[in-house]
Length: 184
Image (cartoon, rainbow, N blue to C red):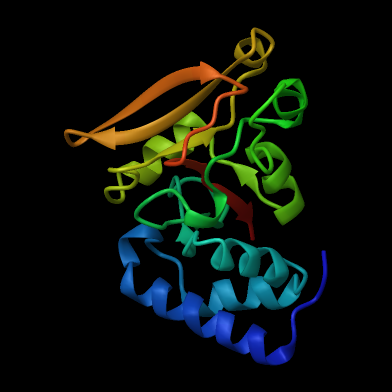
C-alpha cells in the first residue's frame, strides 16, 4: 500500500461524505463524524478507499446489521465496478488457464487493493438497500468446499430478486466483476 497525497485525501473524503449524506438508509444511526474519526485514525485505509473509487466501486458506508457494531466501506456502484471485470475467480484458476487468460483474478486484485470480497449474506443485505448488478454480476467469496471442487459463486439481481449462481473458477465474463469491503 502506498500513501495518497493530501489533495487527493481531501477530495476523497468529500466524495465519501457526499455519498454518505445522499444514502442515509445504508447506514442508519451512524454519523459522518464517527466515520471521519475512524478513517483519520487509520489513514492507510484512504489508499484502499481510493483504489475502490478509481476502479469504479463508488464506496460508501454500510451497516449490514444494526446489532453489529461494525461499520463497513462497501462498493455500492449500481453495476459491478467497471475497473474490476473480466477476471477469473482466483490465482490458481488464472494459473490453470491454458489460453485467453484474463489480466488478473478477483481474489488477487481484491487482496492487492486491501479489500475482501462480499459473501452471500453481505451481498443479500446490500441488495436489500438498493438494486445492484441488474445488468452485471459479481464474484462472491466462495466457501472452501465449493472452491475445492473448482467452483465459485456469483450473484446478481434480476426480476427484483437476488440470485446466486455457480461457475467454474477459470471462467470470466466482460460483465462480471467483484464487490468488496473494508471494516472501519
